[in-house]
Image (cartoon, rainbow, N blue to C red; front, side, top):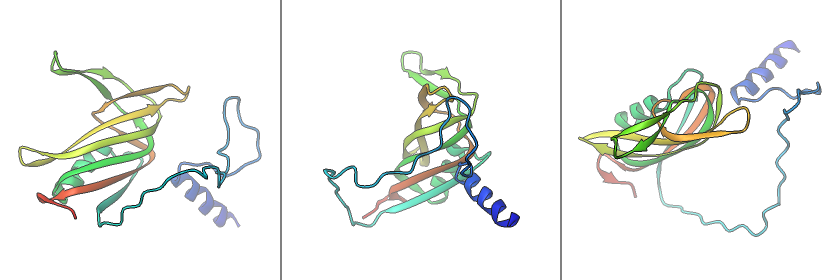
Length: 173
């Protein structure tokens, strides 16, 4: 039915994917292949079963990641932790630190990009939880830009995990 098709399109859009189609694609485009299972038989896995305080944060179009994570850290008094994530961005002004100048060289990202890696740390500065992020973004031509994150506006989604190692000054156990 049309309603079921609309629901499928909406669900795929929320995941940043187009519905499966058989129509030819423009040159340079591809559909995501199925992930093959069983191709890493020699992998080694270490599992930790200790409790951790993990926040999984889902951002949508127009949200700004640094602001949202700062709000989260302040609200939950996260005094130490780490951040990882990925997604899509509409803009992402980045910077390259230049300590002798005490400033950052601007690395503009003024186009739609894929947030292929977001990593960071939360710590307390002057009694306030502070989020420090770095990112690697991929552009449509396959090139990448990377640096310190000053702003990261989401389009269409971003999925970020925060692992709090200390809340309110007490280490998580």
